[in-house]
Length: 169
Picture 1 (cartoon, helix red, strand yellow):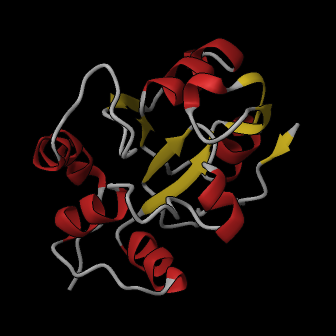
Picture 2 (cartoon, one colour; picture 1 turned 45 degrees about the horizontal axis):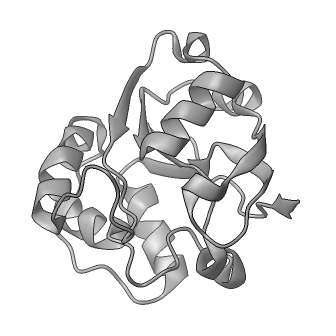
Picture 3 (tube, rainbow, N blue to C red; picture 1 turned 120 degrees about the horizontal axis):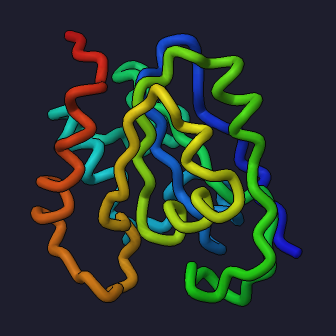
């Protein structure tokens, strides 16, 4: 059983939550969300926030928080060989009931890929999202999937997140 030790990146300013499935091996080793340098996530965040994404992980977290973006994963623990979502079995979900109770200001949830969306639906149910908008987004993973999209196509799809972001200086 693999444990996901990444805590939610959420605070009182979080208006939109990006939910992944389960971090890959590189991300778990680094203890960083989207720690694989090939993952498109941080590049997409740079485009949406019109900023250069910092190299330092703590500064990256500060960047998303500044824009009201939170990060978490659906899966708290699972069985998986390697990093592929398709290898995930026996998922144990994170406690989203407690998260949404503590942070009721979250307006929207963006599922990063099909696996995150499907596991949330199966293990928790979309009834938990009543009063919030939610979206199934193209995965930011570098692994080609069924619906391969270019980086630019992913950025365009992820622009739906902009309406929930906090705009600042």
